[in-house]
Length: 326
Image (cartoon, rainbow, N blue to C red; front, side, top):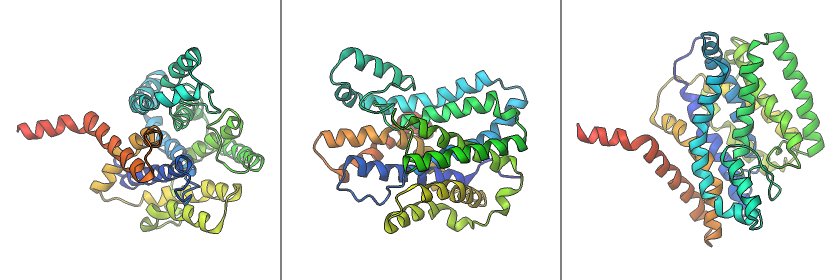
């Protein structure tokens, strides 16, 4: 499928999905905030599907050209780690509370979570920075991809996808929804969810021409996810059927529609830069604001401000200085 080197619509979708996740956690941390984005956890499934699509599209040719799996995984880890570690540093006071002030438990959890490895504490796999479990899951899916799935043919990959669909259906029925994976108690239910979304993303690329045939106009692709989540809230659709339809039908349609957006815009480029840092820092910042005695009207702007400060320091500071000196 011919495509521009930069996928502007997908860039925009990153930020939209991240905002949906922020809305979910804003209610979880400040319960008086309306649960209008209670299905925001499905933004994780979108991110995983997008990762599978992009890795199949971009990384598989690089691996075929000589990039080793080891070097790719090292680069992937180095890309994720600094941003997640920055957010995790903000979460250190809460980790002390969650480990009940036990120095050994605290130190072990801190070391593991800072290395992007799970360590159960307070019923969480990543008590230092709760959303980091999805980064761990994505890295695991990337590893399975480059070590095995990239060598699998389309028919076999489709069979794997169908098996994962069945497993995801089981997990949704057994757990009640697809909001699983962040806790030791529901990790077994989250495993099929992670790999199903990822493999479905791979299939979107492997089935050449499929995105062009999916009926999603570009103008609807960007608002479709939050509209669907708001509709689920308004209609009281809390269980697994909505979740499964969202992942198996809406997410592929949204990606297909976004691929039709060919115009570069400043908001799309900003969304691509802003989404991952926001995802990585927002929960520790919201918890810090709550601990300080403030509410969601301070917490969400504070999360945005910390994200912007991080981006300025890591991405924008040097170009601005260079432009000012010319």
